[in-house]
Length: 315
Image 1 (cartoon, rainbow, N blue to C red):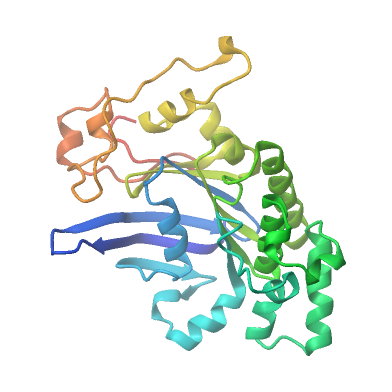
Image 2: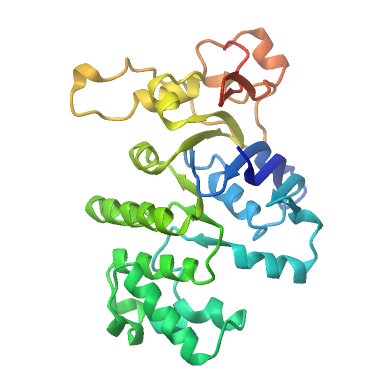
């Protein structure tokens, strides 16, 4: 697999006011994303998923680590070079209300990337905007309306059209359906899949809903407290999860037939603070299988089977 995006040892730490330490939001992440692929990024709230997505785009500057996009070292680019690179990457935000400027109409919102990067003349930009609206399931007459005139699902379609404006190679989807009703979630996920098939765009799809991840992803990465603990093809991960945390997550997913459910694997305690994470394996304080080595040595993300990587001493 040739990686479009390659992340190695990526870290993002936030200083706490008063010099009381740092929050290790992302703490040594390795990931690859191939062209045209969907990599699902899943984990509990606060595990660092959204921060990782924004660091990958350099919307937030990383603290340490390597970040390469199509063989280009993103961390080595100055502001102007990074601005040009942003034509090839985009983001869909979680909040379909707060991410749209209420003072702008739909044509202005979707056309803003085209205007900023001086794509074509006014007529060409207008034609591109109308084409994008049709592609995401909106009508041309919607172009003159403002965000408050639309439902949540329609607003997210506007956000998707804006993300596609410059024909990016990669889009970070930051929980794009979590704020929507379940019936609308399915429509948006199916739209994203259709657009990917048509355009060949790659998605880094951030979510906490495993059913959504299962539907849209080609591969899945599981995060816990700032680190990736397991990465595998979707089928392999859902059929035979190897990390104790992944097994616990999947066992908690409701299923239509209770007899088909995995045996519950309840987690003890609460997620530790990223301000003071446990030594060694971050998950050891909630893992019933933990041994002394888990406290002393940080497990590396190792390839256990072809394409299946796990950070656990006991696997």
